[in-house]
Image 1 (cartoon, rainbow, N blue to C red):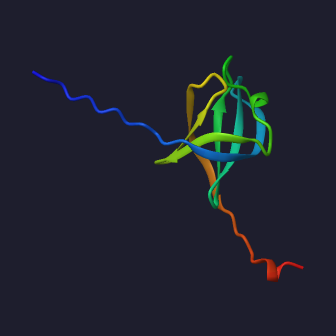
Image 2: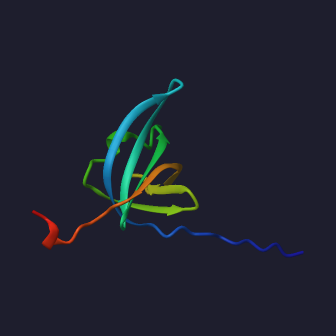
Length: 101
């Protein structure tokens, strides 16, 4: 019998780091990472590890990320990916220049 293996690849896009907030959840170090992808801002809680820390990310930096089915996937500094559940999302409202004062 032949087994059919389907590899799903996630298409990572360029995203901007909006906020990084380290915190502790029930004794486990973690951090909330907020990114802007297109006209949306997404936030997700990632557990800290040897290869994934809040200090790896600086506000304003460009990172590789993807959002799919309620999860955020980011490229770590070692080239691998990390995935976490999205905890918050909001649309960025941009007003036209002629309305700015």
